[in-house]
Length: 183
Image 1 (cartoon, rainbow, N blue to C red):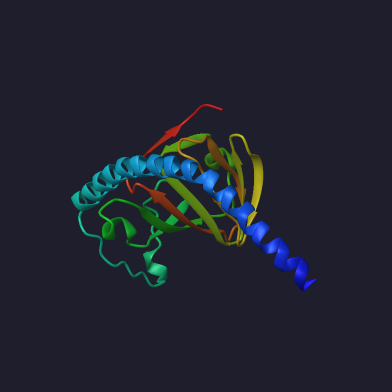
Image 2: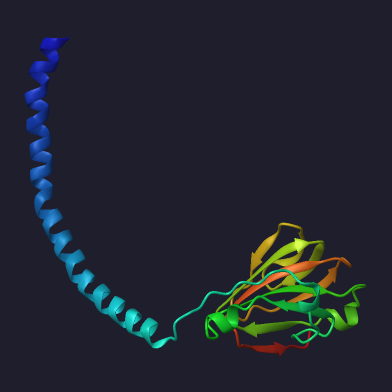
């Protein structure tokens, strides 16, 4: 076996050299393409850095749980919100709050088809459950530990929820418009 390996090794090396030698030209042109794309990418990076520099510096936001921080001053009249200080810390880049939907659920008040004019929205169920409808997804029961994103301007509504439901919601930007639709 050792002799076979010794005899086949030079042949294999030659085959590998031929294979890689043939690809050298392809690699070079690929590198040129990547380099030219890199220049465009560098310009984009520079523009992104300039935009980031234009934003005010973000600060640290620390929020400890206190019952008195839940206020009925948010988007929904049937909910209490605990602001986590993210909007202030990010100068409006994002918002995060804990939402307690007040039970019992009244579908006439709650189940209104709407959308939010946002760039990003994520919801996480901290406690209880909530039944939602999202365009393209249908009805979904979200329980403790469930999380979902709602793409920008997706039509959705809450159908039902438990009396003890708590949700964590993160939205970009902090200020946004909500549009109620006729079902």
